[in-house]
Amino acid sequence: IVLTQSPATLSLSPGERATLSCRASQSVGSSLMWYQQKPGQAPRLLIYGASNRATGIPARFSGSGSGTDFTLTISSLEPEDFAVYYCQQRNNWYTFGQGTKLEIK
Amino acid sequence: EVQLVESGGGLVQPGGSLRLSCAASGFTFSNDWMGWVRQAPGKGLEWVSNINQGGSERYYVDSVKGRFTISRDNAKNSLSLQMSSLRAEDTAVYYCARWIDSSGAFDYWGQGILVTVSS
Image (cartoon, rainbow over all chains, first blue to last red; front, side, top):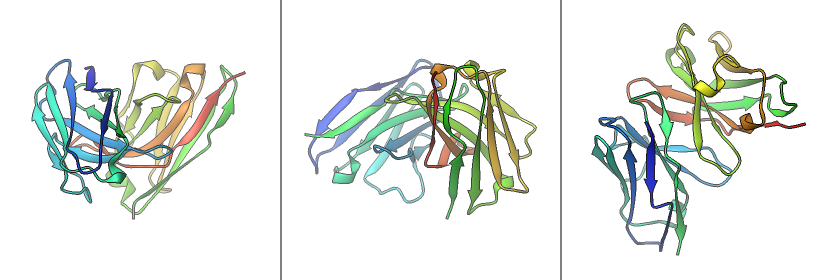
C-alpha cells in the first residue's frame, strides 16, 4: 500500500490552521497513524486509529478519515508545531508516507 | 518513563556485518512487540522489522529478508538487529521502537543510531 501525502511543503504562520492530507492506494480502514518529526529527533506518535490522540498530545491536533483519505488538522499552530509530519498504515505490512514539511511563513 | 537506547552503529564496508542493540526500560518489555524503523539521510521513514513478545514471530521488509535478523532477550530487556551483507542503500539512522499490536502504531522510539555502509 502506497501512502501519498500532500502538500509536500506547507507554509503557514503561527495561529493559523493547518490541514495535511494522506491518501492510500487502497483501503486501510481506520488503521492510519500520524507522526511528527523535528530535525535531529525521533518521530513522535500523534494520532493512531485515524482519529485517536496519543498520550500527551495537545487537543489542537486532530485526525479524521477512513478508507483511503485521511486528514491531520492542527487547529492553531504553535511555534513548536513546525516540523515534518508522516502518516503510516498497518493494513498491509507497515508503510509510511513521504512526509509533509510544515514550515513557518 | 519509557526509554529506548540504541547502540552498535558505525561505519562498515559493503558486504560487512553489524549488530545493533536496543536497551529498553520503563515498561514491561516482555509484554510488547518491538520493531526497527530506519531513515536514510534526508529521506522518509521505512519499517524494517518487527518481533512479537516471545520472539516466535518475526517480520521483515522485503529488501532486508535473508540479510537481517531481529531478536530479543526478555531477561535483559534488550532488542537486537543483526545485519549482514550490508549495502550502500542500508545507510540510515536506525530507530528501535515499541509497536502496539492493537493499533499498529509505533508509540515510543529511541533516539536512533547511524549506520553508514561505505568503502
